Image 1 (cartoon, helix red, strand yellow):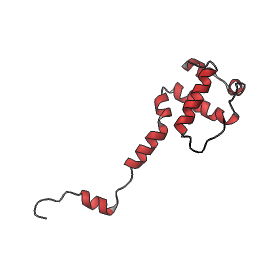
Image 2: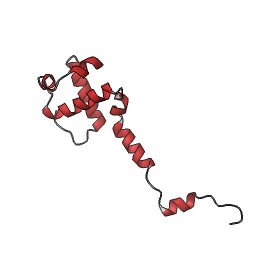
Image 3: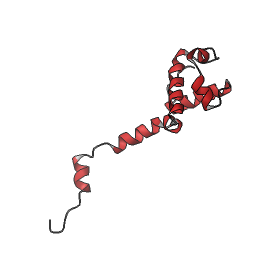
Image 4: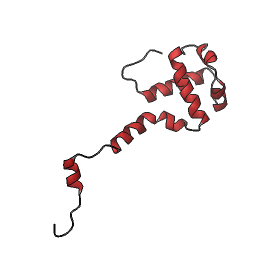
Length: 100
């Protein structure tokens, strides 16, 4: 699959799941049993895609498919929430006690 510059990681993950479904891989058990050799024998599955298929298999085994699909979104949200406020923002957010 040719890489597109503006294609998000999540979109790429959905495209891979769609490719697998079109090749008859429609259950968790089937994805867990899929070998790299079998995947490479499918049309439009490249050697680079095998890594993503392995990630999908791991997420299925761990019952974390939703986390896998949304990891790009949650990583962005978490990085924004862990940013330290600037001194100015911190001083503006402090509550001053009466008499100060």
